[in-house]
Length: 162
Image (cartoon, rainbow, N blue to C red):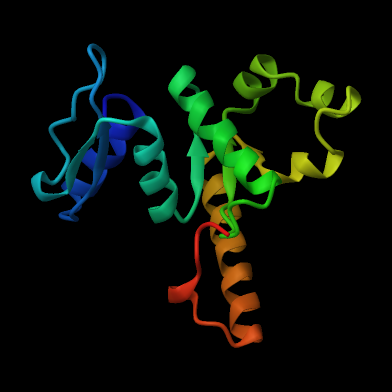
């Protein structure tokens, strides 16, 4: 719910006449709710872990744009929860801006040193265009919805955590 890409999403939704949410954290500096958040959906949290829980609980996908420590915290906690099978709701993850993410993190080194399995690199996808990210996210969500339908399961009752 702060500035930058979060504000852009809120502004786009507001411009389209849609209600939109902001999950803000009380910080001594930096974080202020952006002016485009629907007032009734402007939520403030005192603790990061509660904010992240609700962030993941409501999310259908995660798109991580270049960012700082907060972005890394949210991204790596989500990857860890998925990798360790503590988050059972499938959630497509896009790392937007391949060159940024590949320069910032030596993903192959994680595998080469045995810190993660090579399979873990499939938990996310690098994308460089909106269309590529959209196609990936919608295909992953559609595929999972079809799997649930084939199993005869109701998606609305799908739990986030084990």
